Length: 339
Ligand SMILES: NC(=O)c1ccc[n+]([C@@H]2O[C@H](COP(=O)([O-])OP(=O)(O)OC[C@H]3O[C@@H](n4cnc5c(N)ncnc54)[C@H](O)[C@@H]3O)[C@@H](O)[C@H]2O)c1
Image (cartoon, rainbow, N blue to C red; front, side):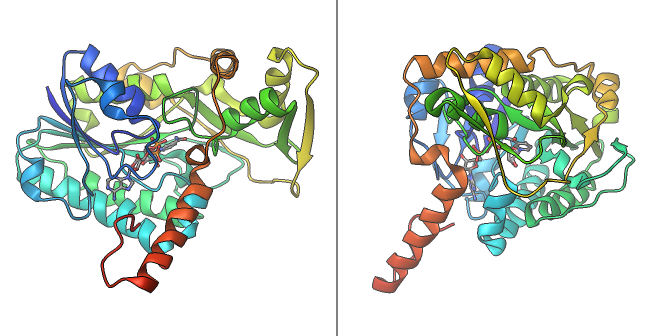
């Protein structure tokens, strides 16, 4: 298939794009490159066409001739989304609906958008796809709105699917330190301190980034028409984990005498998610568990994974916004780094 991946040089894109190539697909990655620090051209090789463009403003003709579009472009978490609510809405909702509508108009047959289990908010019950959504942040609201509008575009010629991912962990060349397992492991290794939000009893659903890529490719390649117009949870029933257990697993894998340190007020925000529908529709089950992800990150640390600003997604976006404000003070030109 000829595939366009928007946000294709981000954390998930860095794993997905090479996997798509391995599956024999032809790939174009469109990304503003807000946070690139390792050269995607070097990482992907010359077989991937990289477009440095913006989903909000790109020329529609760039979306011509694709069999499938996988839409990963976004300000990618709750705190980043709260930095500038207008930009978040503009990219995560308006931008992604634009890409879906143009893709449909230009003859793409399959479209998948990356949504999130955060659409459920925090609940006592185990959430499945029939559970009413309860978005608590701009990021989650934009996901709910984009699912609604893009799923509604589904028809016989254009299959539109929204995948609600659990919180991701694991290594990619654009490593994210705003993700809880990544951060606890990385700082456990580098500082001997595993910082855990008080009191660690809260549950969260998790998924390894390699499994995210597998789910996206299975969905794209599947001929199952039932995928059209659907929102589907992607994760594992066995990876609804309590944060304190995650912290203990990390501690047990570190060579040093690391300690677990509590921070923040007691966090009552807890939720668990059911992932049976993905098994039913695309026969999806995760392959990579928590231990795999922890050991992988420790291994990368042992081989020189350094703490760099771009890994701190929220702080880094904050700096870009400040930089934009500074530039605007001195110039009438539109800032190049504008969010
Ligand atoms: N990582 C997770 O835990 C997780 C969980 C659920 C859902 N998701 C979703 O998966 C998608 C990818 O997440 P990720 O973890 O790879 O995040 P990421 O921040 O690493 O990647 C997002 C990419 O989108 C690009 N981008 C942002 N705005 C753009 C624009 N206007 N035009 C073009 N490119 C733009 C950024 O430069 C970045 O490379 C996001 O939609 C995210 O919300 C991620």
